[in-house]
Image 1: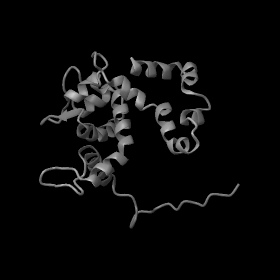
Image 2: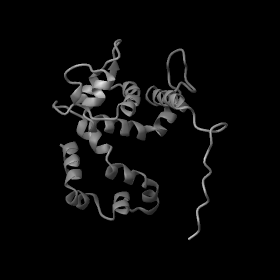
Image 3: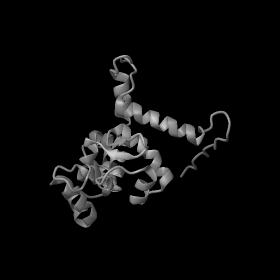
Image 4: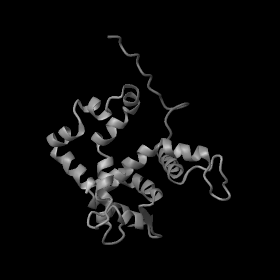
Length: 196
């Protein structure tokens, strides 16, 4: 087995990672472009999204899936059912690290599941309400399902599946979906909730 070459560590200075505050701004801009579409090739005056902006958003679609999964898994919509909460209160109610959770509030807002009030509190939007667990038309089970490792890992092998004709799930987990679910009751419960 051949040794892997060492990966150089970047030091502060030219080519280093941006300052943490700058990363937050870049992250939020990336999510803004992802959700609303960059106007590359479109018309900034009308807000039309051009082909390059739409394609850039599609490239990062997995990020939306994971953001919605985290939103659903933490039960954010259920915690906001009683009304708006400030970031620190919301982080405490979902038992999340306040600093990390706070960085997700803007992407959640840009996705359209949260709205920020003038006082800095957050409330559910009409779309966010659909991620509550206590409503008949809840889409929370779908968000929980699509964010599971057993759902997204096979998609990372789609090219292999197309080339070989073999099922990606079987190749990744060495068994097909239903036997896998039979051996993993937690996964089965998430899958079944999504299918009902």
